[in-house]
Length: 254
Ligand SMILES: Nc1ncnc2c1ncn2[C@@H]1O[C@H](COP(=O)(O)OP(=O)(O)OP(=O)(O)O)[C@@H](O)[C@H]1O
Ligand SMILES: [Mg+2]
Picture (cartoon, rainbow, N blue to C red):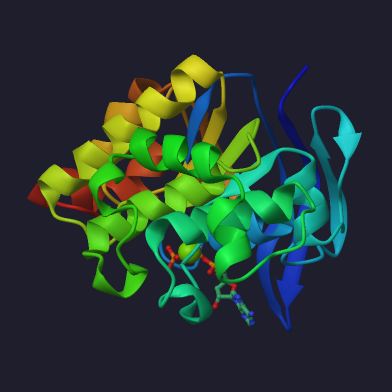
């Protein structure tokens, strides 16, 4: 059974058809890159899958169960993890406390503060923090973290619900070249053994073609190509719409 199935999904903002009849699926353990020019509808599609946006039409299923229109925390309980910016509320808390709060939330344990929180889900939090390479920073406030470490923390938080599907919207945005491959190597290590499927958007084509098992190309809300990375890269239509600039200057097509 597919981990994610999207059928005829649509979402318009005023007259803009941000997502315009999109159908695709993600299989168990697959790493799928969703690419396309700015404004193609990638983030809108992500938001429609994880519940932040209610689509106008179409169906989203997680492991065969329809989740269309459910609130984000309900979708999250179906095993969809998502990296997101650490909110301002939590920057004064330590790295470990942020992960503990997320774990407490998943286990529906009252979110304690101060002393109570200190003992809750301590070992689980520490394990996740070590897995993402932040073991040494566990007790540091999030406000002191470098950007790349924040991204690692986001990943740890996204893993607190033991997801079957991880959605990552531009996981390496703002990172330098080495940081990008470090981040994707880390994702690989964490998802492959755990059998987690990944759907990610990314403008850096080295990351896309280095890490995706399959590539789905979106343009103006519609899928214009889908397949193995090499086939998509060679697709004339994709090159015309999106990849031409990348291959010409050998840089990112942002
Ligand atoms: N909340 C909103 N209100 C109005 N229009 C929106 C809203 N969100 C997105 N749009 C529009 O929908 C279209 C798709 O936007 P979206 O952010 O999904 O694209 P994207 O592929 O994620 O782009 P990028 O690569 O720049 O992140 C764009 O035309 C955008 O202006
Ligand atoms: Mg986007």
